[in-house]
Structures are given as structure tokens and as C-alpha cells.
Length: 280
Figure 1 (cartoon, rainbow, N blue to C red):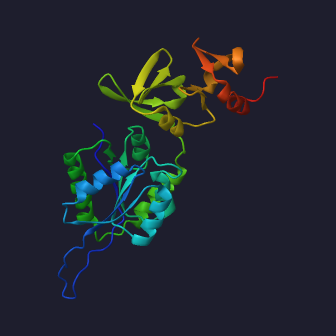
Figure 2 (cartoon, helix red, strand yellow; figure 1 turned 90 degrees about the horizontal axis):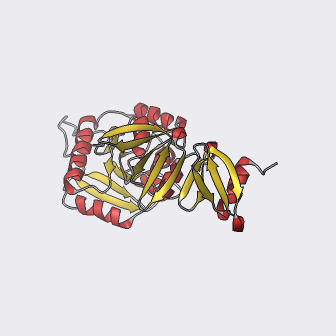
Figure 3 (cartoon, helix red, strand yellow; figure 1 turned 180 degrees about the horizontal axis):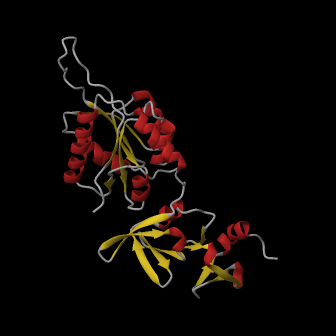
């Protein structure tokens, strides 16, 4: 089972009265960031009866999230990992250490767990999550807020963001659930990838593994200098291409090193030749 919720901390000090007694803690000012309206609505509904939380806004993309975080300075942000143009990790970089709030990452794809772990993130919410799972995440967040409210975590966040900047933009390994276990797969070992409805099938030598993720989402995580879409339903590791054979209508047959034959659509031919160079 993957962890529950990624929580990363930079906290404001607890207010105290002049006589040294603790004042009533302010509500947890919370921002919801997700490009799917239904996902934002679900989180808002799960928070509506929590008297310790004040929702300060919603954002449907990363650039808006950066602006709102810098303006509102929320204590807690539910941050979707995968969003168009600017993903959740890029939001962290753009916000910077000084204004970085607590972050609970949310994602529909297990593959982002690898990068979360590399960023020293302990947990995150995997969609779809239910009320019980969400409450566990909130208990975790509140506990972290309570225990570290008076600590200055900026040095820790500076180290995390520095690590984030040094991480490769594309994944070099994947998390794979197979035969009752979780295994790591180096992306360089993948020969080709095919779409299968809401899943993709990763072909590795003579083996294959199915992952719950659309082909477009998988493509976005892989280095485009190594992995190229050659058909609307196929991505290939170009280092595994052995030969190209012209077909009727501008298509090509792609022969891989292991003997697999695939089709290079004429719509993707120019991208391949641009990357590899025109034939001599």
C-alpha cells in the first residue's frame, strides 16, 4: 500500500499572550489546487465540517496556485501533481522557501511516488481516496502542524527545493505493481509501450507489465530524447529500433532489436527523423 499523504512543512509560530499563555490557535488556512473541478469539489466537501479549517481559495492550474499562495500565505495546500503547463513540483519551485506552506500532494498515478520519495516526501493521497483515507491525511497534517508550529523549517525547505532543482525532469525508474509485489523498473529497460484503455502495457524484453495510467500521462514523464510516440497508441524506446521499412501511404514498419514489428504512422514520422536525423 502506498503512503497516505505527502506533507512538507514550513510553519508559522504559535501566537502567545503577553502573560506567556497560549492563545487559541488560528484556523488552518487551506488552499485546494487541482485542474479537475470534481476533484476540488470532493476535497471541499470533505473539509466542510472540519471546524479547524478555513478554505481560502481554489485554483485550477499551477500558475494561479503560485499567485494565490504568495498572496494568501495559506498554512496548508492540497496540490495536484499533474496539471497542464505547470505541475505540482514546479509550483513548489516557483513559490520558493520563504512562502512555502504545508503541502499534501494528490495524484491519480502511482508513478509520481518515485519522485515524491526522491524529494524526501513521506506520504501523498492516491486518487480516488475516500473520507476515511482523507481524515487520516488530515490527522497527519494537523499533528505535524501541532508539533512543529513554532519551529523554523526554512533550512529544511531550502534543502528540499535544492534537491528538487537537481532532480532530473524525467523519470529514470518506475514503480510497478506485479504479482503481489512492488518493483522498481529502470525506464531504459523498456522496449516499447502500448495504450490499453486507461492503462498502458510496458514491454520489457519478453515480459510485460500493465500500469494504471493513460498513455499521454506516461509520455509526459519520459525523456522525449529517448522515448517517442510513433503511433497514437504506441511509444517506443528509439534505442531499441533496428530498422525502418517504408509502407504504403507514408507509414513505416518499425523493427525492434527483439524482433517486434510496430507501425510508424506518417503523422509521427517527421518527429522521429528530426530526432534521429534523415537517412543517408
